Image 1: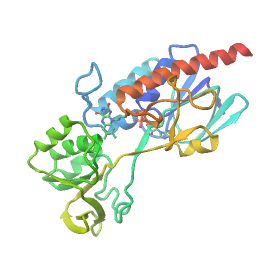
Image 2: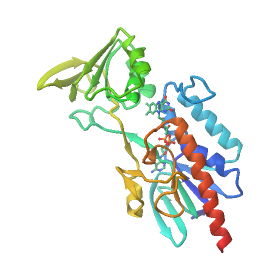
Image 3: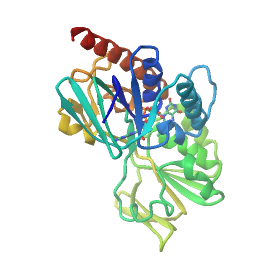
Image 4: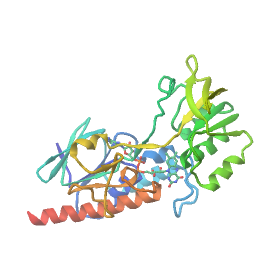
Length: 305
Ligand SMILES: Cc1cc2nc3c(=O)[nH]c(=O)nc-3n(C[C@H](O)[C@H](O)[C@H](O)COP(=O)(O)OP(=O)(O)OC[C@H]3O[C@@H](n4cnc5c(N)ncnc54)[C@H](O)[C@@H]3O)c2cc1C
């Protein structure tokens, strides 16, 4: 069992920001992640709303944030967090690799892209179905693709794909809920068809995807595509927190403005929080708040003893 004053779960922008702020205190801390540092940043083609950096690629911002953290001496360890339990005032964070005892924990595990659950989706994942245009878009250069979604992320990913694919079918099951600027950019591509009010019924193809079936008002249509990007939204990553009994809403951790959850010593930051605006800048801000609150909490606990 390893011991740190604070354990941060998740090395996305929220977790890295928290780790950087913790380094400004005398407390010890570790940041754990089951994937590469940077989290969702690694999947974003271009970020144009983070102050001071102008348009920046997600992977570049991830690399800069990790470099910054490493230079300050932040300790990063691999680990898929499977559960968290309490032992007196302490929290025990268990991963598939190790256990971590600490006085405070910051949950910064973000969200996951929702799976639509339509026939053919699971079987074709990695064989034409992808949830990350930035990661996989290149495989569909000059090929027809479909994006399914209605929010900003779907529109942003569609803009990226439109520049690569021969044709892009944008299947929009619900009224568009995205920035006008992004919608206008996407409309500027001649190879994009907006299919409003259509639902995705199935994904087909012998081994690789070659067809999708879409439906509107009971009428089905087939489209020939090689790539399908279901970008219907995000779901929380809090399953491992449920046994702990922390207050959740729709799976997201409820916090106050200091990022404190319903359990003393347990804080949350970034997209995993129950909140309205899930963006890079708000995740970074949450991380700073959560770290500052965790520092105050742990110092107060230490003084008591
Ligand atoms: C396609 C797309 C485009 C976007 N474009 C923009 C944009 O242009 N501008 C903008 O501001 N925002 C954008 N966003 C939103 C932005 O990416 C997020 O709000 C932000 O990155 C969230 O950061 P986070 O640290 O809270 O979570 P994440 O980046 O999701 O990081 C969470 C980390 O926790 C880890 N993790 C999860 N569960 C566990 C576990 N059990 N154990 C260990 N580790 C775990 C994950 O591996 C991950 O590294 C976009 C999002 C998407 C999906």
